[in-house]
Length: 239
Image 1 (cartoon, rainbow, N blue to C red):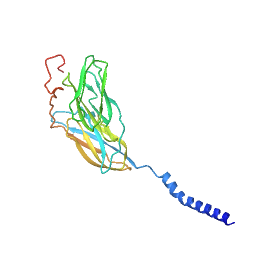
Image 2 (spheres, rainbow, N blue to C red):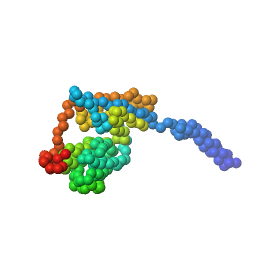
Image 3 (cartoon, one colour):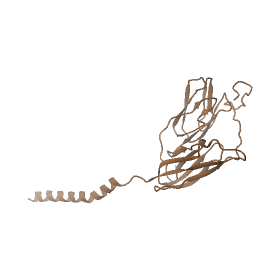
Image 4 (tube, one colour):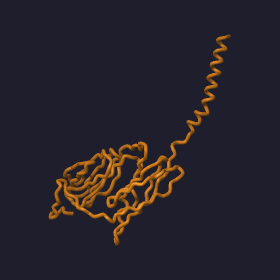
């Protein structure tokens, strides 16, 4: 009798504990995920008098969270082709650790290289129909050139954040699913001084983040070849 009573008492106490825990359990299961917002805006560029902007689509926007580690994103491999003595596209943004392939789609050879301390490489001379690649392991902007054609220039911007985008040709951009919090917005364009602005992201919606870059001080300077010398402009590949 004593044993049966004790057993029943234990069962009752366990049931009471379970019932008391149920509201908290239901609240935990049904609680909403981290609030997220959409960050969007428009970029414009101030040019010198008489000049117009034709490369808005080369602008990169990315967000870095303030005061805490920004979430990482896995590698997202990409391609920059060589076509018509040009790199296509001229600008690529990828997460750190991504591999970028450089297929040669021209009927002649190219030699892709960079002397950037962030990703120094030389892919050597290779013909039409072949492709070689580089993995970008450090964050930052890496200028890329062809050792045969002095006018060929490209840029890879490796970012250590999943919140990035490339601006449309109309200057508009949008980054969805950004967790609410404090961020720094980074805006990069090859002809303008990089811009950094603070931004508070809220789940209820963010006002349009518009910015104007200043390219009036930009002056084109011809890069040197992979040996640090001027290009030979007298040959058939001078363009």
